[in-house]
Amino acid sequence: MLKLEKKVPLRRESAMTVMDAIYGRRSVRAYAPQPLERTVIRDLIGAAIQAPTAVHEEPWAFAVIEDRETLRRLSDTAKELLHEVEHGIHLPGAGSRRFKLPENVFYDAGTLIVIYGKPLGPFVVADCWLAAENLMLAARAMGLGSCVIGLAVAALNMPEWKAELKVPSEMTAYAPIIVGVPKEEPPPTGRQDPQILIWKTGLV
Image (cartoon, rainbow, N blue to C red; front, top):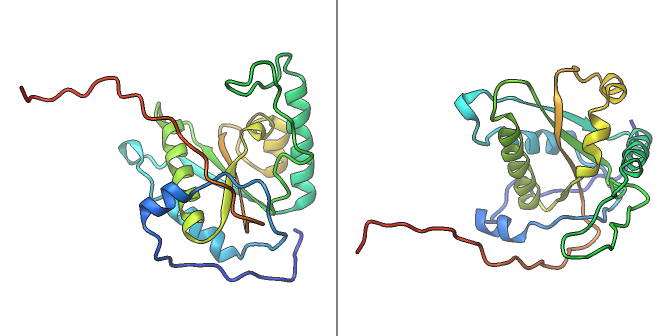
């Protein structure tokens, strides 16, 4: 495991409200080289498992990868798999413009937290993504950046990578999330107004 000498003090407790965290969260794609303390990562995972879970199954399990050589090789595998897909990736609303792959799909972040799901019923995927959102909001409240790296899912679910990471074969990777100290605050991004299909009340 690569160890860097400098530690960064982080906000373990924050005056930020839940709404502040929700509206302030951004997908961060540029990270400072400082590593995260193990206690910080445990706090993030602790926040993740406070998420709602169907019939209290708690189907999630976590892998933490901080070895930069492993992250580099995993990034290479993810890009190789993507190139095998004939249609590539198209950005919504961008016509034929293809997504430009970064040199490292993890954007040189030093920590990747992968949320895996156990085969425990039809709501495992939802439970794992609820845990992912908790983790990312907690990261925001602690002054950290995060970003879901969907491109890594296929690679993480390869038998070869499960064997290397010692992940049981029956588990499925759903949410790979990079976390770290952001180099800069990303600009705000807009959202379309929500489409409300129906708002039925008993009022006349």
